[in-house]
Image 1 (tube, each protein chain N blue to C red):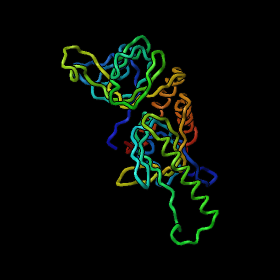
Image 2 (cartoon, each protein chain N blue to C red; image 1 turned 30 degrees about the vertical axis):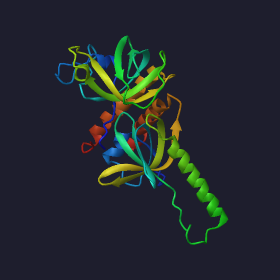
Image 3 (cartoon, rainbow over the protein chains, first blue to last red; image 1 turned 135 degrees about the horizontal axis):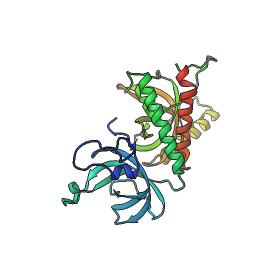
Image 4 (cartoon, each protein chain N blue to C red; image 1 turned 30 degrees about the horizontal axis):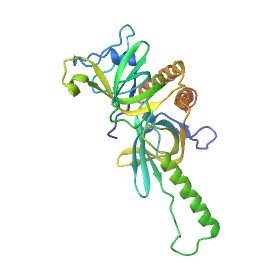
Length: 143
Length: 149
């Protein structure tokens, strides 16, 4: 399969990503592995602003992230609603040619997930992560 | 591994990475839940891929076969049955769009070295917490049942 799966990460983890090309960053104070430029990620946030038909801003846990939705499936964005995005992390400089050192999520999938229980969602992801680790430990041949 | 103590085969709730890993043998009945990230609609089938945050797994939904339609010996019941099947297929196919969340049941098959699910039933999910519920349930089943088989 040519499409990579979206690794579940929070907006905070994306925002703390090092854009200097140093590879995988670590989420400050949490000891967890963050993400790197070019990664396929899946994130959830509340829509703060619709900047243009191509760009929106989402926030979660006090952190904001710009999302390029030009290539994603049509989704009627409304401020205040929760959205889930799957896409790739890119450096804004690549698309705009500016010196601003900010990350942008180029979404290929956008979904309205208003009503999503975030505590339960995080618990589910932790359980899934645990299962993934255990499965890999028990079947060394598994990818 | 897919057989429980009663000797019967069961549908296993799995994460996509478990299906893709090849640990479960071919023809095993599985259930997966994820977001549709790719759709290809051909004449005889619809191919789509679901992403459940662990991997992307390819699924194939075949158009129901119209056997015996040229032989002239098809009963009225059979014709009605085929029409119902065709309508169900069309409605499932129409509902498949990028970004929608689905629960898929079917058999694991291998095609060109890649695992895929031959879809037997497809259920679109509108409830935003459905994937989380599936995730928690799958993890619980793995921990309490599948791991000990």
